[in-house]
Amino acid sequence: MISTTKTAWTTTFIVACFIFSVPSNAQDQKFIHELAEVGKKISFESVSIRINNRNASYADVLKIPDSALLKLEVYPKKEAIKLIGKEEGRNGLMLVTLRKGEMFQADRTRKRGNYIYNDKGDSMYCDHITPATLGGDTTHNSWYQFLAKNLGASVPVENGCPPGIYNVDFSFTVDKNGMVKEVKIFEDPGYGCGNEVRRLMRQSPQWAVGLCGNTTIDFKEKQRITFVASEE
Image (cartoon, rainbow, N blue to C red; front, side, top):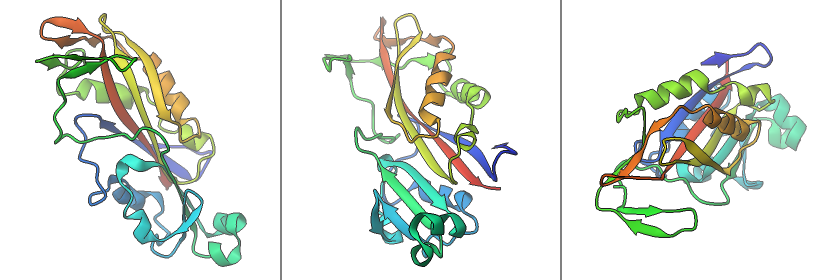
């Protein structure tokens, strides 16, 4: 966890790999558990809630799958009253923004398919695919350690974010030389989160290449980095 004297919030980050994260579904929402850290002085059952700027209930929030959440911002009473008025803001405010584009899927129970896709959408069947890994580490601990050491977890706080959950879903390609290229942010939650992920990926060390059988391939990976800004 990283703290800052600039604001009253602390931030952590959570990494979700395309293959290795927990299943995402509305029955077991990861972000609901993270809410306990985001607003410790707020009752989420009583706050005013807006999903994509429409009035909603906490029951509606419980129906949102992790894959659909772009960001969730929480405003305590004082800030909420400034935004939506004394009557609606008296118990605080939760603003939920859902993704508009390609959904991030994170389900380790689903097997990776046998097709390799290029940027044009063309596919090639491969009977045995070996994923690219950082330094050949199939446990992915090296990748997580790289993120923990190099990611600026306090970036959204430094850019004035309210307490909340900010998801950056992105893809990148490990080319046949093991170099990271073509980093694509699916949708940016703002507060410098997307730019921080781009900066991070420019620092990525060389990877062990992906293989189709014994042939090196350009290997595309999807990941999610979640910034959680919470009350101290």
